[in-house]
Length: 209
Image 1 (cartoon, rainbow, N blue to C red):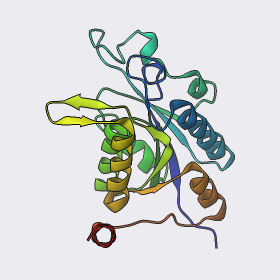
Image 2: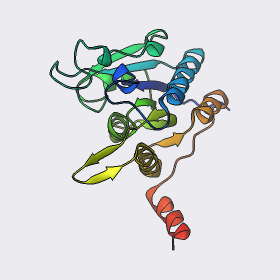
Image 3: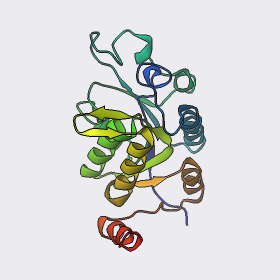
């Protein structure tokens, strides 16, 4: 029997600054994640899954996503596909002072599928907020992406950040899967695999006793 899940695809901050701009996504390679975001948007349209596009706009003085700059504009792969609902934000979470929760509730959505940028910032914030307010949450690991950091706390590559954040989200906050796995799930009505903190920890202790 086909699942009665009512999804919305959330496409977060696919903006030019992340795609060869001032803060280029490095892992997974941005061309790869962009292609998968496009595939997910096309499949959502075919399956009558609403697409919500999020855009982060910051003040003119900011070095990234500054109002009125090319870097703040949505990438052409998003604008050419269009959307069912648009959200403008200035904080990491797509739920922060945007009315997104109300729109989702009014449209009978119970599950959000998160794609876009960045895995460890706006995606993670949206995933956590979504769980806390009662949505089932999914994250497409190859339709998201990270960049490297170095600060007084240390340094990490884009791959390290992306891998750790997806492992953490799978352990409690979301069903993390590839775009291919998601496409199969929406066609079959299957339920994506979820996990928990205890089981994730037990497996790690068995791998590294």
